[in-house]
Amino acid sequence: MITIDCAGDTDLAGELANYLKNNEIDCTQEDSLVLVDRNEIEKILKIFLKETGRLEYSILKSDLTTFVVAKVVPIEDFGLLKCNICGYVVSSEEELTAHQRAHGIQLL
Image (cartoon, rainbow, N blue to C red; front, top):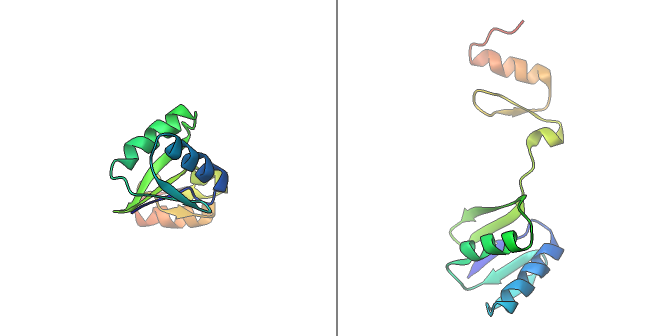
């Protein structure tokens, strides 16, 4: 059984479940999860997102039996800062400066 997690979006899960059923793919919806018994589901998910115009969504494989379908939102949209060298995330300029000093960067 493959789980497709729509990241809390029950409307998306419902639309996906209807899409799968219309394409003769057995599935079950449980809130924002869609359960299917198909191995090639990633390919089908890509087609679903393309056909429904959800190009801002991504398909992330969480583990062997779970896919997450969600919008990828840059951390900067949450007011966080990221180290340009290693990707470490902090919540303030002071923390970022202290972290970057560990890389040997001299900041003025």
